[in-house]
Length: 403
Image (cartoon, rainbow, N blue to C red; front, top):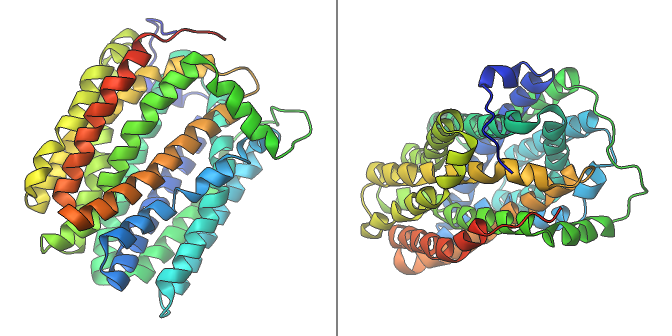
């Protein structure tokens, strides 16, 4: 449960090993942002289809659901530092292969194979990283540290999209992908030299079915189940809106810089929201803000039904994304609800739901945009966020702790 005890960002950075983890995570998000932008443009240029462009966005997430059903329990049984560094090398290799495939006639098809393969193993590395956070930070340091990750992840996405838009406009997709590969290699190096040695948390022999069994046990806990559902659904619907950035820009007659601006809008808003809520609000206030932030998240997308010019559409998405700070209100509760030794597994379950949503949201939004245009499709997703909040918020209000 939440307490009134607060900490500061300075105290979070003073924890040994946190700065290196923070830096490696920032580089990882930066590289992923560059890759998503370049691959989405590559596929849209090859097909001219909103559906395929959204599918390119989803390919980086949906296959991770399969890996997420098998691999996170393994992360509890392996040393975290080499595992996280290996993840950086895998992502770097994927971006490099995408760069090579972008120069061929079958680049889009080959790219789907590469992106799918990397996404399949991503949950193993992300679960290990989340487990290290729980080892380094406790109490309100954990909550503030997670909000700091959100802020810097958004900054990295913004920087990636800004740099990617310029490089894309001047040099093309191949160079954006090569830059992404170099950044991911840098994240692997920083993880190797800067992270503390965190031993394996689980000591029993691993079997592939352990993850699903563990998920079932965790999902049976009312606190965990209620928080997960509250997080998964709105994030999935917003991911559908984000996936329409390239088609929206193309439909408004704008170029690659406009697509970058539309893709940057959500991380910009999320950064502002996380900074404000994480820094200015105490733990009880963060929980009370959840309904209002969810309302903002859905309602600000509704004017997109009129398909305004790209700059105004980006502003609306940015305002809506401030509402993503609602998830900060439950972070402390979620951390406390995880049984000891199941931290990586718990964040693996969170990640599986997020990846499922980030994959399904675009697959819903893309075909919808082909029917009614990207603007009205985005407004529909905003309406669905409001509807989902009506059903999920009562679950949040009546959480029972049964750990």
